[in-house]
Length: 406
Image 1 (cartoon, rainbow, N blue to C red):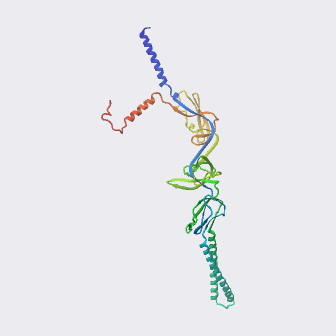
Image 2: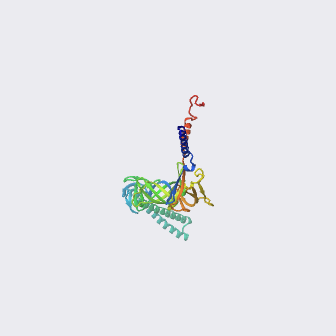
Image 3: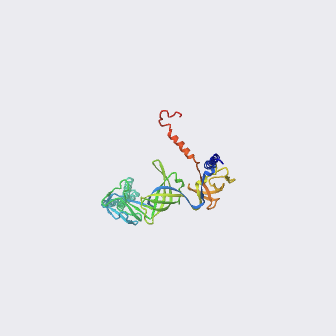
């Protein structure tokens, strides 16, 4: 073989090799560029929650005030004092009240004397009138004076009772067992009850029993029900999670800056007294919750083996007679080049995981998603195209002659 023939053969071999390489890089069928994501059917917990913020407060909280005006003469309790029902908390100066009581007693005594006199006079007139010994006018006058004296006597008795009651109000007693949260007065301070009852103390009944008043957005309130589990945290103890449950969903709406919220009451047991009144709570209300159930990623139900995900040699086995609805869905598995539909019945979903009630077994692998890869050179071509688009923006000024064809 001469030298010229060897060169021709070498060129021929090189062309064949280049053709094989080109076919391997660009000539593969689309199905070889698809990457499939799979997942196994597992058991776990599925929950859906509503988040909100609220304020921690005692379940029972009473504002203690005074119904009479006067100077605070003595305080017997302070902040955080444990009190019992009926315990004396404070005492107002009683000088004015005692004087008023004495005046009412004197007034009642005078009215009583007048009443007794007019009663005797009326009885005499009544007896004489029956014997026609006094005129009708004298009898009616005696009766009028008697009735007037009787009314005055009754009024004086009521005034005396009121004065005695006001005197008793000068001593402030605790209406419940509890702890003093707030004290709003000092000894020597004058309190006036002319228009409203001034608050002297705020007493919480039992700090072991707290609650959270949470403001839930109108978009979420429809899912909130009595008895749902709640977990929450407070900034004072960021590493602790507290538990409770929904005890009340109030119907009254509150509108703040065009945002409508509803108050939800959550009980919050506080055995170690960590929770304090007024703390801000970040709560999570579990509106859906199931434990130890079969589950699958929710996006698996959006996967369908159609072009361009499958090639000409792939086979799709559909489920005959199955119509998808809210509870009946289709999952897909892949064995070799065969895609097989699996009809399943689903339960609750939190958006990322969906409960499987029936139709598939634990540990079975299913298709979740697919990614189509780019052919060599496609990315480069796309990049060049994008580069040209960027360089020739119609909104940028052009140099003279830039639009001419080269």
